[in-house]
Amino acid sequence: MREGVAKVLDDDDHEFVDLLHSLGVQRNVAKVITYLAVAGESTSREIELGSDLRQPEVSIAMRTLRRENWVREWDIKGEGKGRPSKVYALNTPVDEIIRSIEDQKQKKSAEAMESIRKLKELASS
Image 1 (cartoon, rainbow, N blue to C red):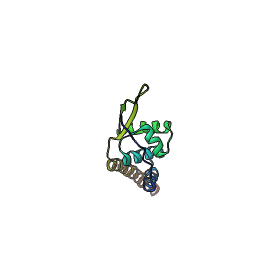
Image 2: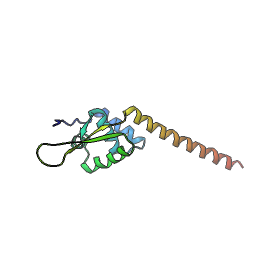
Image 3: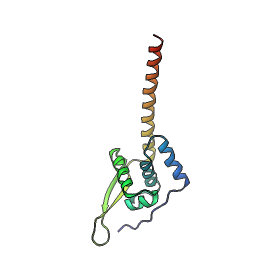
């Protein structure tokens, strides 16, 4: 069985979360990305404890991460009876996640600039 201790996000980690959030990443998703980046593979319980999220918040964040293919998950059997625990790890390196966010922002910026150009063109007609 995997014995894990939940890492706790420090001030630099919280700054990373805040920056991701300021770029439009949902706060819970930003916390999970940051936690997995610093802690590596972790159970959902470790993520809850280390990122100060509740279980439903972790589950919702994981849906987004799975949709983007940024996380992988697998089950590990616990001691005794009961459900296996989910273990998560980033499937995509953090620098690639950042690049993806950057690409999205550049595309939106280009679209906005094109709209402004068209507005100017229409206004001068």
